[in-house]
Every structure is written in structure tokens, then in C-alpha cells.
Length: 97
Image (cartoon, rainbow, N blue to C red; front, top):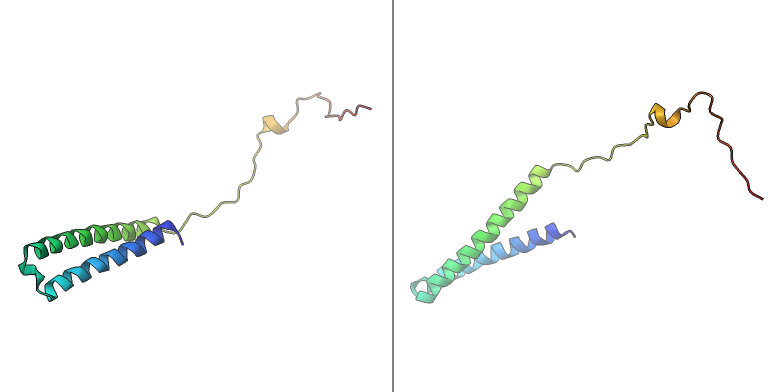
């Protein structure tokens, strides 16, 4: 699994966990306490941060599109590389015994 997939899945887990904490604080009636209010604010902040990161990952993945195809390259030589000057002797192999 790629690092992007791991980051995405962990962000979704933390996002859903933050929402669950918010719902739990509201359902149990802890909003009336001083600690409950700050716990709710901090869980909303964490949820918003991971939600924005999930949004960023999804938009970046949608913009990327398909990966580019590898093009078949052919080697092109210029005339100066392939042509010999007129009157030049063909290449000879030298064997030393």
C-alpha cells in the first residue's frame, strides 16, 4: 500500500473518531461543563484539520489524471555522425598478435 493510501485511511479514521467524540460529548450532556466545552472545541479542531486534509488529497488525486504513457524512442543520428568524409578509408580492425 502506498504512503498516500495509508495517510488517506488514517485521516478518515481520525476524522470519524473526532466526529464520534463530538457526538458522544453532546449525547452524554458534558457540554455544560467547562472541560466538556474545551474538549468539544479541540475535537472539532482536530476533525476540521483532518477533514481539510482529506479534501486536499481527494482534489489532488482528481487533478492528477492518468499517468503518462512511456513513448517509444527511436535513435536519430545526424548526417555528421553517420556520414564519412569523401575519400576516407573504411574502418579497419587492428589485431595485435
